[in-house]
Image (cartoon, rainbow over all chains, first blue to last red; front, top):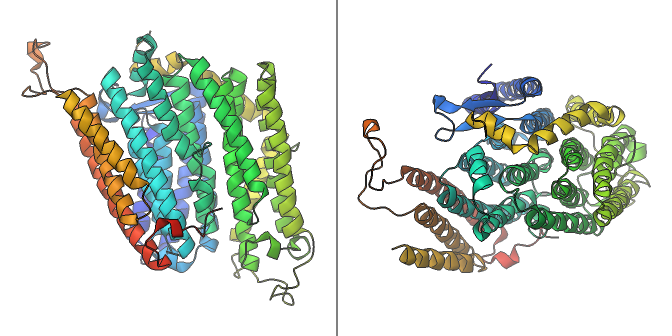
Length: 503
Length: 115
């Protein structure tokens, strides 16, 4: 089907519209949100199988030929990302049925969640840089609203930082875009890539690469541009911060991967070395930042940063294996991170606090929750046989193969430090006894809202099973990742698929 | 003309960044507005300034000998203006609510969520 690439954008849009129409009727709204999320997931899987078979799916909007019209391009990498976005979206929709209060629901949580998904999928599909910018803004606007929805003090304070820094990133992006347009006279990514391949490698191209690196780096929370993330991600309700943690920074990573495998590939000794240095710093600062935190979600937020470092590390090494590792890592990370945030949400619901010093004893009061924490936590730290082990293994293997021992060793060290943080959460929140100062000592803990326990647990169990499946049978996903990486490393195929010309 | 535009754009960028770094919320918002306008002017300038030339040429005439105006940057700038307007409106409301809730008119005081 030729219009398949448009569906991951159209379905969330339709869902959001339906939710908006039924805003006053909560039941109908929830039904629309769930059905929309499931439909999104199905069409994402269809897109993934189609790209597996055909390599590239290109949709020229309105039938305008490539460099003039708007192209939607789905290659294996982007359809993998879309699938993950749909998985996250579905999990969050189910979780939100139980976890979001009726106030937020009636002020449009579901419509904006689906608009956010639309923006995210639009970013993954955009074949045109300006279009990418527009999708970024769609995504940002929805995320601004989700972040501020509810208007609690922490949300607003976090929101201020999030908004300002992301708008600065947009300004950087637009600046780079304008200069790039002045240089090559086109905005279609394939066409830009073709021009840049033959253009002389002037300082301007390198400057442009740096501008894009900063713009996408802010969104991906790279060192030293990440400060907005730990200031804001722990403030909104868990359903919101879980979807942010899973998807938003990864859109930045996706844009970085796209830009630095397609557009700026002629001066690798400069750009990709720099990316590697940034990756090392990002990994290290993220994990060290997490060590000194005491809030459940604050620790997890810092870990997002250090994990982004791993993903960028594969891009910096820039071999087929390393890029496959990056793709694998992103897949693993989105699933695991979303799951961890969801677990933290249930812990918060049970005890009304996130402070690790005031949690404790979940192993005796909620043993199933403890198992559900343990699986993604160990996966995040990279213990076999979970997905995180393979993700780290491929990346570090790739770095040793390229004789980049320093970054490989750093990856191992950061993995160990991650384990320390996860152990800390485990020790303080799950092991031990229920703190004496806790007012609900006699009642042990609150109960989850009746009839909703299944809705809380269903997404967590599904995501945990996904982690386990990837961990036990990594072959299939690794093969996909390798194919995606070989597509990424061969820009000519992308150009050919979009423009329909041979070089 | 380009040199003049370059100076204006540079000046606007400088002003925008300076205002962004101020602690007063209103100044930050004005800074954002100026920065987005600077970006728009930059796109406009970087895509070549032309004056008095048509953007559309008859297909039968072939490639004209005179320079033609490029309509794309204007479309880009227009889109960017619309987006920036929407985002700015949201930012204004957010800052107002934040200032009301925290009872602070200074961004340096809004750091309870920092780490």
